[in-house]
Picture 1 (tube, helix red, strand yellow):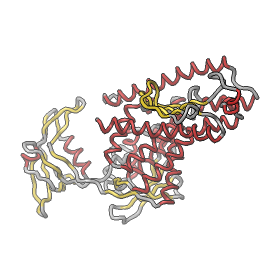
Picture 2 (cartoon, helix red, strand yellow):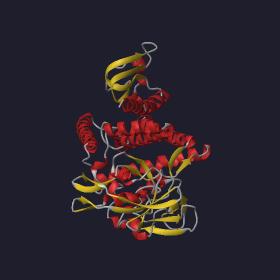
Picture 3 (tube, rainbow, N blue to C red):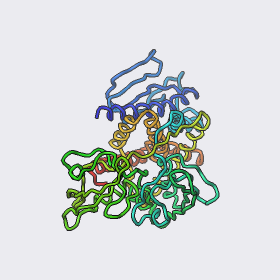
Picture 4 (tube, rainbow, N blue to C red):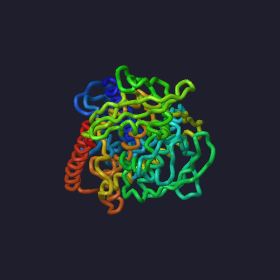
Length: 456
């Protein structure tokens, strides 16, 4: 819990500082006087100011954002000798640049963070697939347990190497959101016998890259050997004589290809609410033997399933995804662009009803993932930080009053008409913008709570 809270505060702190620094640095470059640079809102906890005319830097009690307050005649009296340093006196192009600098700083930060994550390197599951879901596109296309996805293509001509299972899932999600088919180049686990399969994602009838859609595509997880892990004393597995390291060859005469198949057979070993004894053929220390295993019955979301009180499956094969200085930086640019465009498309689909608003996440989800990424290591946390930085940059460019994008829309109106938006309309738009933002924040918080309660 402490790790999660600290990781969340660090995430917000870094992203807010960079966002506001973008505004601050460009404002200073154009000769605008900055009165206050604030991280957070509310009561001031810490303050630093070199002299009375310098910028006041403060940290406040509520860490959900920040702001840069500039000298502006619309917000108070400005001394005659300082009017040339007022924000409202600057040319339109300079004012627009100052506003756009905040989101731009977040996007540039994301490039660096993604690059650093790839320079450090992350351990990810190798793109060797477990058994595809029953009735899935992958199963229909002939994908089998143990297939290694070497590369993917959208058009069957240009192929892109797949670095890991995480990389594969990312590319599948992109194809789903764009409603395009995707081809996979497969081999066996040793890299032999290349073959191509095509997944027609249009058959899904959905452009939401959620868990259910990915299950319908098929590659649920990484291939894991059908071997026994830790066996709990006194459970069905221990009572049957199973031991850690046993390789399961078949159950009731049916071959077991991987850990997922073994797991599914155990769960399905219930008839009319009672467990059915299963005949297991296993290999132990080079010797083949048969055992009878009778699972215990437990209820899962109201459905009776079998359990044997043992860890099923070996660890998946892992690969280290690491890039050099140039390739890592290029990948950082590519990933920032991909995530940005993906975010914009998802927001657009939510707006027209093609995607569920359940995709919106709030502070609780961010805090949860921040804590998880910190526990996995620096490279994972940097990647997470980059993802949130992109989201912050893109969301701030939305044409909503109170956001940077809303101010840019005002300046676009001024550029087209030759006059600024009237104070009366500014007040109306500000009130509407506050209402929209409060609604979005409430919806995101509701989604967070629903996820925590298992309702989403």
